[in-house]
Image (cartoon, rainbow, N blue to C red; front, side):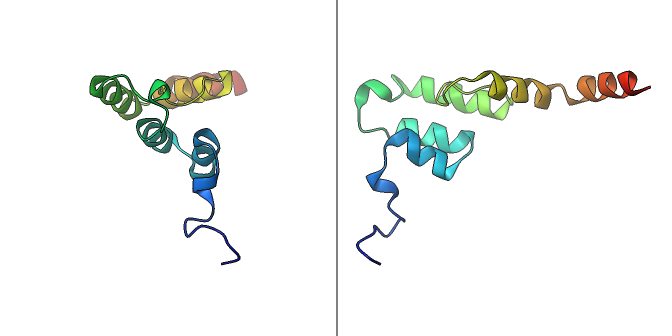
Length: 92
């Protein structure tokens, strides 16, 4: 394999960069839980559980770097009916 790792070289990348390759909120949660640097991991198992609950409720997770677009997409996903009704009303 030309000297590449069996996992496609992901182990040679940094934690955040590997999470981008894998993608998704669950991947960010797992990457944070498995982080080598203790300071960057969840402080407690409760912190991990709370992030999983946020994921299940379609809320922004702590493990992922915050951005306005990400938070807006989560808001729209949680309130689809409201946004669709508002969008259709404006199109008239």
